[in-house]
Image (cartoon, rainbow, N blue to C red):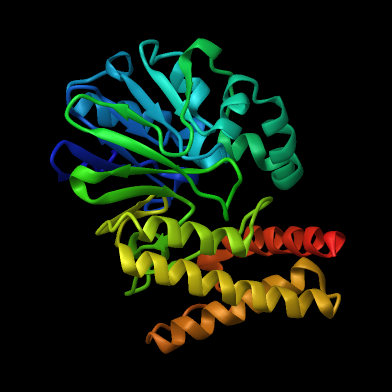
Length: 313
């Protein structure tokens, strides 16, 4: 079941059940004149996309556009598999991302270094997309989907190959991971929701995060539509992302100086987030097992950031 929800106008949201977990990853679908899907998730999420389309009396062949905010596997790993069915769709990507959709070999190699033998089980088959099906959008360029234009903005900080999609008609942006992760109740089981940044490998850059938050603020939108997971009031997303990124940077600087490795960063992240939750009236598990995957990936991403920064100094 895709949990298809009409948000407003022709815009729907549904759960991709990434890694079998509810509330982990969402996709968005414009069921207007030109059918437009934003995010594919991994190849393991394809059935949830097809189910959502079917519930709207659509098939993959009815899709006109498929947009991926960046090519991390939980956002675009399934794009190639979908492309085999969505033969009429144009896949829209950041200039740095497009080449990895056309030839995912380097993407597979890099992800294998992070996830090891678990990669295929986590993300499924990563297939190429024919070059003629891929459309690059530069910063400030747009596409016309019939009843509105969607505008693309280069947004570094989480990844160098990331853009945000702006819909002025609904005063919103589809943020991928560039404006944080919204941790929702259906995922954590906690009676609160909050936004923290994603610092997963390999491009985290706190200065880039600050640049992106400032850039998107100037669009004066009301709502941020996260891939992880669902909508946030814009100011809440900005605050959680920026304050979190600066706090994560500070603790990783401190741990790196003490030579405690990524495991030390992970311990400090766990402590920081546990303290935040306790101040919100939540008593999480000691190990913060609900966020175990993110803690490890964020710690490793922060370690890569520290290594890169110190090599340059």
